Image 1 (tube, rainbow, N blue to C red):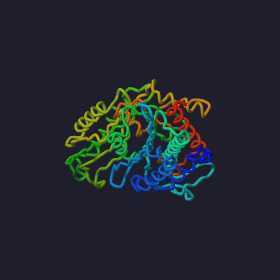
Image 2 (cartoon, rainbow, N blue to C red):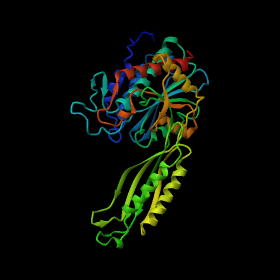
Image 3 (cartoon, rainbow, N blue to C red):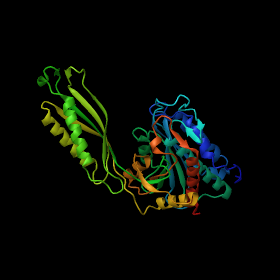
Image 4 (cartoon, helix red, strand yellow):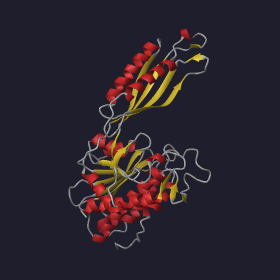
Length: 406
């Protein structure tokens, strides 16, 4: 393949991101079927430009995670046993949502004031596009040199990241990624290299009481009153946990509450869904103890009520590994492209790479991508043009450095 087959402008990821934004992959909603097919064709067109003997060595795999929801991995194998560089990028977005300005279509791919607007613009279709272009640039280097890189490189396009993260779990189960690979997701990181994550633990707490007429509350047991006692105790228990030097404090959010029937009826049941972001030394077992004690104390405070809980999510905190060679390589690439190394910080959410780190004990899992997490999941979501150009350049240079030793 001619090394000059494509004229490079630095805007390949920007243009691809706009195309991806115009494909609905909302979760729940349209899901990833259409966008996965688009990406697969995009990759195969570029693989087909290689000489047949080289093209045959590039592997494209699909994995059905849920009915009609396939994830995709493309791999350029390396000539050594060095761990692969893996970009992992989710294809789904949150729901399109309400509240957008009337002149901004969430699927319109509007470009205005050097910003790309639309659902997924920053979370994370611009990061996905940047990683795809970096992977395609390595394909071009394979064609131009006539040989495979020393270190292999893969891109995984995952599903369900915005919900239960079943896509990355399936990728681990299929052996696509594990303990040894150098894994980078391209979530929006405000130009930072984010190398650690708070844990994410979810509880569902149910309180059962006894209904009665509100004029005679002593004949019932108010489940909402008991739940309020439990909520206050859980909140105090989590907020009193030690603060981590880098990850900060543990936090708790009571994101959804259901209970009661009418204002004039003593409520016989109440349920709350709880999101905890925990930092060492606090973990799920510590949180479980806090929830148990809170329920017991609420039962004492409101006699006749009985509580129970289910832990529906248990993701451990991921601490920084200062010796990570992937972190050093990303910092080198940002220094070369941007003139100075990226700031190193933590990711306040939980990403596919955090799942890999927690499940597999992989110390080379982190995040670097275009856009700001502060704009994700909101109306009028956008990503700046300059951010996408920077991410494309950094990821391309990273692949050159670590795959070819340049």
